[in-house]
Image (tube, rainbow, N blue to C red):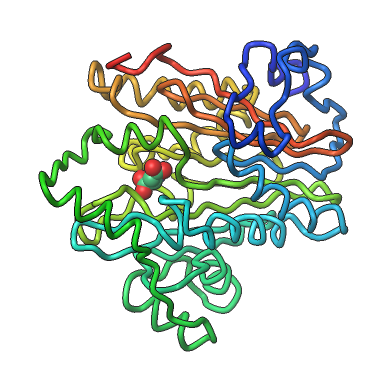
Length: 350
Ligand code: ASP
């Protein structure tokens, strides 16, 4: 892995989001022109901490994870605490509270978590629980299983002290009612309104962290594709698709049209590509290449974005379409946000 091309910031553009500017988090163009060595840590025994999340607004989630990591906490605790931020944010319409509902108006959440020992847990189509990531962790730690779904997952959560809450906010209910007016639904593409939302803001959180012991954990949480068929589950809670961690190699997670990620076992594919020597960025690109290959022209309407880290602390990302962003926090640096390189250089209607 040492002789592979490291994560290259100079091919990336920094995000120009007004929210980030306001938060003082926008990095300048000159900062963008750093040498590769500035952005990567190439020592064979990389010691964390490091945390990387899908989507620029998740700098806030990274900050929460960072508190845990800085205090010497585990990567597992860090990713759980980090994911809490968008899960509890009513303005985040793709994760947890305020997540856009399915076509029947129900908010159903998918989440998974994986630690450095290969332990993992997941919940699928879970309703009425604010922090599905913690239920996923409890599945991992308290049961002999990996996944609990639907009513069974809710029963398990309630029996284990989680409170039932209403996750449908007035805003997401309004968006659903507007959607009902024409009910456009084609799961094989990213619907127009959803594309707009993805372009403008953000989506599923996938978070990867390395702690001071060099141990890696990851977490992924989503309300899934907006206005999905009742019962539809995407990639996000599927270990190997939406998230995979191998403490010897690295970790990967993703966002976007989950069906496509499942078809190529996205996160596992990326980790295996890194095992065979690819850099995180090149491994993500290979996964995207497979999605492009499967989909032909249709791929131009499919947004999928991956992020990955390896054991050397290198970071990579790649997406089908532009506007996929990711947030990074690492020792000795301010929080950073980047635009990922993408296969296509513009969206179909641009
Ligand atoms: N990957 C998620 C899913 O397919 C949704 C998304 O990231 O847009 O459920």
